[in-house]
Amino acid sequence: MKELGEAKKILGMKITRDRSIGRLWRSQENYILKVLERFNMAEVRQVTTLLAGHFNSSSKQYLQSLEEGEEMSRVSYASAVGSLMYVMVCTRPDLAYRVSTVSRFMSNLGKQHWETVKWVLRFCEGLRN
Image (tube, rainbow, N blue to C red; front, side, top):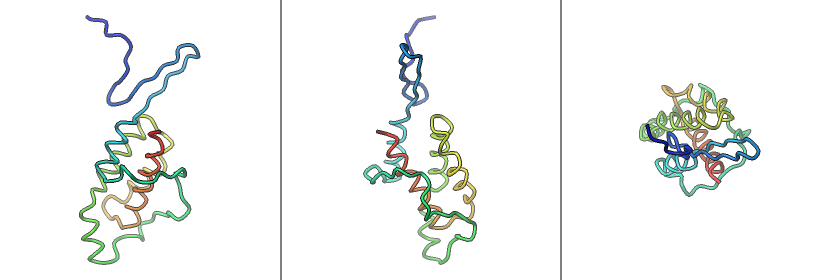
């Protein structure tokens, strides 16, 4: 065995310790940046509210037209929700309610559901700082 010292990173999470007060922090700043870049949202304006009043997800918000269906077929909705789930499980349990809500519409999503996922990603932009 070889002593490698204190862990500073594990599974993409940055670990910060303050032994004087006995605190430990985990951060997924780099992972969140990669997710935002993957969905072309690296330069978006962050939002400070996780749940906005104008987002009410329901199964009645399914696709309304063929054009909308074509547009949504190019969106990797499941990948975005999965990325948010990883952030939620590892470091941000406060995302649990919204991520569980948007994950319900994987098979029958509409444009409003994608807008909700983008809003949560914009909220995550603020978590990086």
